Amino acid sequence: MHSDHLSARPLPLLDLDIVRNFVAIVEHGSFSRAAKQVHRTPSALSMQVKTLEATLEQRLLLRHARRVVPTPEGEKLLGYARRLLQLNHETVSQFLQAPLQGGVRLGTSDDVGTRVLPWVLSRFARSFPEVQVDVTVAPSEDLVARLDAGEVDVALITAGTQGLAGARGEVVHREALAWVGRGGGAAHQRRPLPLAVANAGCAWRKLALSALDGANVDYRIAYVSENCAGHLAILDADLAVSALPRSLVEPPLVTLAEPEGLPPLGHYQLVLLRTPGATAAVDALAEEVASAFKQWSSSGAHRPGLLGG
Image 1 (cartoon, helix red, strand yellow):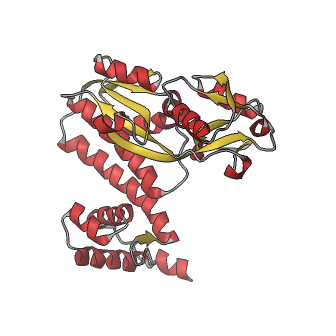
Image 2 (cartoon, helix red, strand yellow):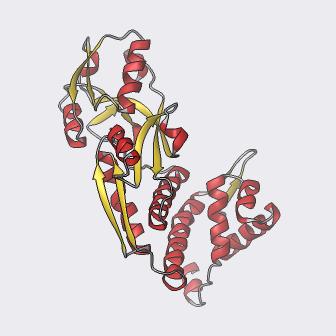
Image 3 (cartoon, one colour):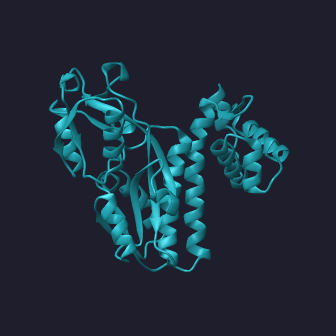
């Protein structure tokens, strides 16, 4: 009967201003912080949410003592809301902005390039179809050198939480590392502990070796691979264990618990660097990359793993 009732009347149109403010509230987890971003009062945002809930006939937000969180219906709306805002941006840009032209040289580590960039570059191409993007895949230390030499315009690099790179760039992603091995395997029980690592400049490698040294765990570097597929194949064959982001762990790989004699690892950061005096095309791509990672972080959903040197 409810569906018959809906089909008998025209569906309402959503106000994109309210949709935008709803996204801001969820991303900030607070009416007051969102209000500062969108230049409205918290009470005005509260009224808009009530209007949106009345329109959709659903409870969308739950107000806790220190944080506002979406209900399951609110989570569902959040995905649609972001798509609506992105489509609105693309549509308006086609008519009100002069076509952005030129080229951008983007540097990225291996797994960011294969897992994350296809989606980011697809979004960027829809908004700026006349911009040419040249992609270079290399270890993080090489990318910093190439950026400093003027060979790339934008670089996505991995760094430790206290890394120098974070002071000169924008942290767009932060994630916990975990010890990873094959489920049911025995590599983690061997001593010295066999490790699979990337190059000597890799932030994950530095965090892993520092943690093992601090815990006095006997280990040996058994395999070094700069390629994502090769690195995961070593773990799949139960030849070694490695320190990887939790989001990268998929069967048959599993995270290994600390009681098995392995020390905690902490977090790593993904840092966005851009050349000084960047062009409009460089800034546009950098902002698209930062926006994509912010969207993943605020959603709390499973994100692609970010395996990079």
